Image (cartoon, rainbow, N blue to C red; front, side, top):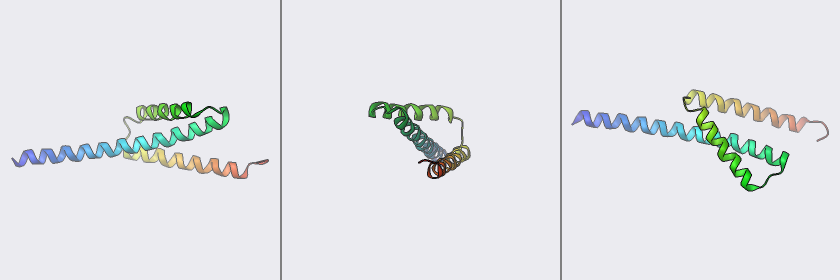
Length: 98
């Protein structure tokens, strides 16, 4: 009986860990999708349907690409994305003629 409880505890821990990793990948994909969608909306001027479509497609692509990634890889990607976002913000604030 003790072996069954230990096995169930291990499976529950593995399931919650993989769920948190999936949630982290989903949020990262959403942020990338939202960024690309906002850039596309400003450049092309498309409507809300395409805006949401770009977000959903980008989330799907990011989930597919990051399938084999662990926590460290996703967090490093998030760090790189934040640094690029700060760099773009700095460019927009310093850009001549803005």
